[in-house]
Amino acid sequence: NADDFGWSESCSRAILESMRKGYITTTTACVNGDFFDEAVKMVIDQGCQNQVGIHLNITEGVALTDDMKRFDDFYEDGHFNHKFSRTKPLSREKQMAVYNELTEQVLRFKESGLKIHHADSHNHIHNSPNIFSIFMRVMREQEISDVRIFRNIGDIPWTKKVIKSLYNSYLKRHKYAYSDFFGSYEDFCFLNNKNINQLEMMLHPDYEKKQLVDRNPTADYESPYGLPLENMIANIRKKGYEILKL
Image (cartoon, rainbow, N blue to C red; front, side, top):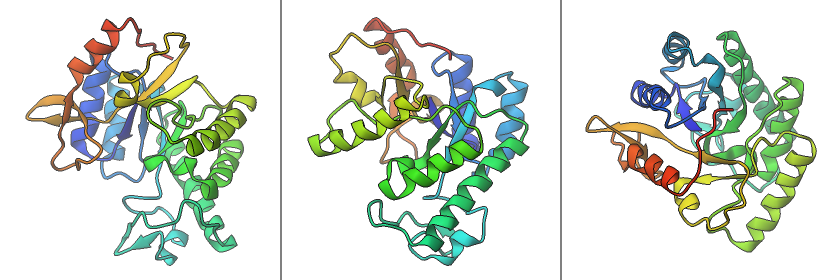
């Protein structure tokens, strides 16, 4: 899955090219991205409109609702600031602001005419204890049945492993989980267990000197850098894994 569709023209075009080449099978869109409306038209023209989910976002870009703009631990200088605590409980007012913002983002996605393939979140905000219950309320109310599980491969401290496994158990028990494992390409490279039914790999396609790359997490949208996507896909296939279209 490619995150960040609709955020910018560069990454959106890179994602669509990656789809055409069979490198990725799904993408998730930021409806508050500057290029979202144009990206919707492009994905429909390419015939991939059934492969797009929603990438819910309260850490970057502009809020769709006024409620979020009232709180400086979420918003300042006209943008989300990614300063909210992932563990500190939110006040009732802030909980309602997050709920309203996430709901509005889902509604905007639906208004585009696309059907939501699945849901995940920018900077993994739905993995936050103080956001998860709000996120899942929106999933239930908006009838979104597939949700990205918590990262469960790679180098994870044992305390986080325990917490993540509890949340993943909830998602699987309530039939929201659509994969057994989730992580990045780097996580996948450390994976030794061959008994895998289905793994979701998170990618961030973009262009670097006209070459398709998986954007490094420390890179920005203006100056992306990362590993050549073609080489990564070749390595995945060399290890005997198939890229499945869901």
